[in-house]
Length: 223
Length: 225
Image (cartoon, rainbow over all chains, first blue to last red):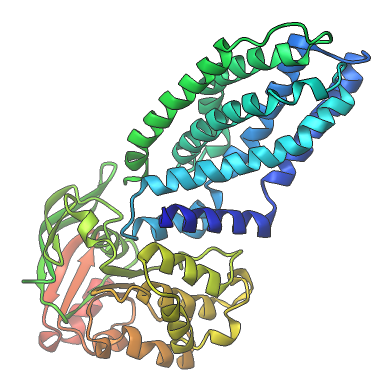
């Protein structure tokens, strides 16, 4: 736990100093919503359409953070520094996933109100009791898969290309589950009863990928 | 028990042999100086000993533990000072050392002690990216010594250091440190002083393995031609 705390503290400190990930992710998401606002030429979107736009935008914004997740370590030799220490290597997975999760939370604190303002037809208020739970499940999946993929991609020369190419197919079930779970919350009438099916599917996918990431992460760090 | 025991160590990069047929033994407290031209395999040897690279064949025992199987037991007992300082450029010298101290379970008083020892206490609150290369090398030296390693792996440790800086770090990483040391060098005149064994590498293969007292200048010169 001490190792995770040390790594997470370092991670957040580096982001705070460089502001390389969160501002870029947030600006990207807001810009995409502005583009949709003008391109769709509608008063607003709701239901499946709204949910799809929200989650695809969040996913693509997350990719910017995923691509940057291990860059400081690769460029400054942080990998070697960590590998020389007598610590459990999965601590790096946990710390990086928690860092990415925190970036996603900050992103959503900015992007979701911007989405409501620019695109969403119904009011966001009625969705609020359930929306944070769905966002959290989606974020967890993105953080776990993103960390795993970033660890693979960062050691290759084509990391900017390889990251999205590996991550996007693996994240399709996350976006599918999250978008389906979110859609009933963003309808005009709010009469559609949210089903537990999609949140449960998301939770299961998160669990499976959490276990896979834990099992293989050590090998990814090996020479 | 020997601090280092290598028997026919081989390490490949793809098809290319970066190291081949390296065998030697080094006792605790002794110094091995590794010489050779660029690309001879000196850095690869250090990275294998630091557990960062796996040996592909041969027997490697570091501090009594077999690599790669017991690499976990070697980590934390080895200090590596290589070409890369292993410091985050955006963090201050102090933040970097505190981070590494936490990873190694070392108290924060050791950070201050080492910052003073390398003459960087006054600049400890400045981001590493703003420091000169010599200063970064001094902080990296402190980083390598934080956990009081038994074995020091030094890749041109005086690179970028001015005479004053080199003098400051000498008691910490030089022969007087009392640690077992492996020093890769391009400066035989300076580094052979205090050496117990000299390994000369050429294209990854040992071209020379001798006690420094038995060497004449020609053998070393031949390594680079």
